Length: 195
Image (cartoon, rainbow, N blue to C red; front, side):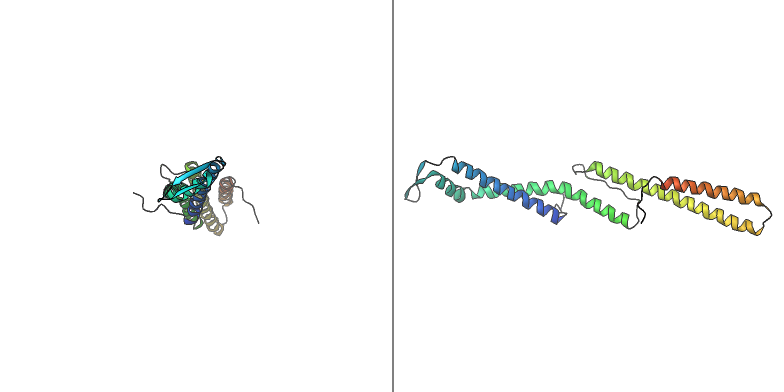
């Protein structure tokens, strides 16, 4: 059983309050419509040994407030619980997405997102996870190419000491050029605004 349904208090609180207010406005509106639909009728009531006579609309509103307030309150509570469960299906995934972005900002691109079966936003989670793994793969490739370029530059530096073999220079320069092309290909997948 889940222990914490109230994950993002600000978001969920705002929606729950809005649903509750909407429910109260709906109940008030329905009561007003019913009261206005019976304007020119008279009602006689017998309450606590007291015979009362008056406008049906006013008696209806008094009766609604005095006897049915518990029904309205329990209906409002049901709305609050239902809204909590529904907003949890959205707030939970938002919390997980924020946690993943925090990891990404720290430089950790090895994580993905997995939602529960009933959570909303599975498509978004899949796209974020695929994008994260794509970036991780491309950065890994760039790191590998950079290591190879460093090795080639070291080989060139060592070859420079024994200058007689210029074909070795050409082979290393060709290798560095190819690695640079591979780096450009890996990075060209992304569009970046340069400052």
